[in-house]
Amino acid sequence: MGKGTVHDRAAGEHRATEDTGVASAEEAGAGLGSQIVRFTRLVAARRNQAKLEQGAGERVLLARLLRDGEQRATDLAAETFLDLSTVSRQVRSMVERGLIERRPDPEDRRGTLLYATESGRAVYEKYRQQRDEQLAELLGPWPPEDRYQLIRLMTRLNDDLVANQQKRHGDGTQPEAGAQQGASKHE
Image (tube, rainbow, N blue to C red):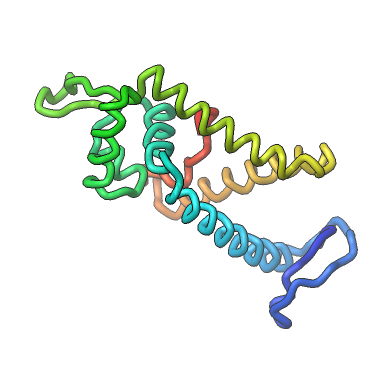
């Protein structure tokens, strides 16, 4: 595999390898599998830390409303994989603070649709800007070519994972809410 470290499954350790620029599909699968597990653990640790931060839940809800547009709280809960009671509490707080508003659902007047206000958009943009600044700081020491390739390859991997998941679910009508996270300029 390429420059850096590759997981040696037999030894259970990371080892430096030469920069050959090529990897078999099996080597890539093993190395990527190990790095995905590591990345997932790092993301989980960051999410646990973020849960303790003010506004962590509202970031997820605002992102979804900005990306997908107005929707019912039940749909928002399903798409964000959150309990409806949690979403309801967050929605109440966000309505009180003017970050989102409710309007009657034109298709079913008994229900309401939620949408992000300009204040909500501004708050979310502030969150997104902070995240982007943290990542920019992290990637600052990287060569520009490496930064570009990281984005290109992560996009390709995510696109392939979504396509594979849709293929596995037949016609692709299965909701891909989790797979689409971060797929737009709003997230």
